[in-house]
Image 1 (cartoon, rainbow, N blue to C red):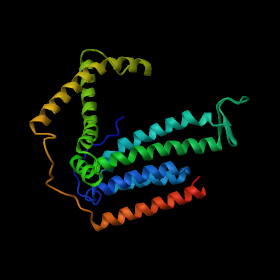
Image 2: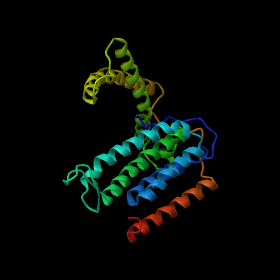
Image 3: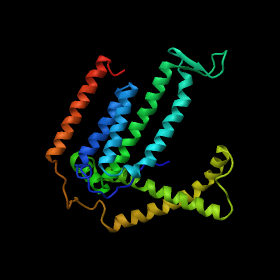
Image 4: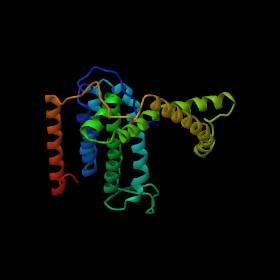
Length: 262
C-alpha cells in the first residue's frame, strides 16, 4: 500500500496556507509523536491529522491510506504485544503456560507504538495532498536555504513513486493477460512470483531517468541563477498557526521532561 498522495486541486483553508507552515505542522506532529508514550494523546494526534484532511476536503482520497495504516498498526500490535513481559497478565493464548502472554503494559506500549507509526506516516501524505510540488521546491530553496539540486532530487523522488506504482500495476496486468496469475497461492508464492517483475520495472525506471535527464539539459538545468514567478509570503494566519505549533511543542517538551506524557 502506497501512502504517497499526489496533489489534489481543492480550494480550502489548508491549501491556501504557506507550504512552510504545513511542513512545520508535519514536523511538529512527528516530533510530538516521539515524545509522547500515552496512547490516548497519540490517538488525539492522529485524529488531528484526520481533521486537517477533512478541512482540506481530501478526506475521501486519504481514507485508503488511513485504513492501510490502521491495518499496519494492528499487525504491528499483534506482532509486538507478546514480546513485552512487564505488567499484569491479562490473558494467555495457551492456558497453563507462559507462552503468548499478554500484559496490560505490553498492550498499551504496543498500541502506542502502532499509533505512533500512524501519526508519522499520515502527516506527510496530507502535506503532499495539499501542496504542489513546485511550491515545496521553492519553500525548501528559499526558506530553508537547501541547494536547489538536493531539493529537486528529493521532491522528484517523491513525485515518481506513484508513477512507479502505476508502472508496476501495468506490468502485473500484462503478466496476468499472459496467464501468469499473481493472485493465487500463499504469501510466499505471491512474493516469489512478483520478484521477477522488478527487472522490467528497473528497466522502465532507467529509461524514465534518461528521458528526464535529457529534458533537464534542454531546459538549462543548473546553467545559472534561478528565478521564480510566484513567491509565497507568510500571512497572519500562517504566523498564528506557527506560533501555536511552537507553543504546543514547548508544552510537549516540558511535560515530557516532567514525565507527564508517559
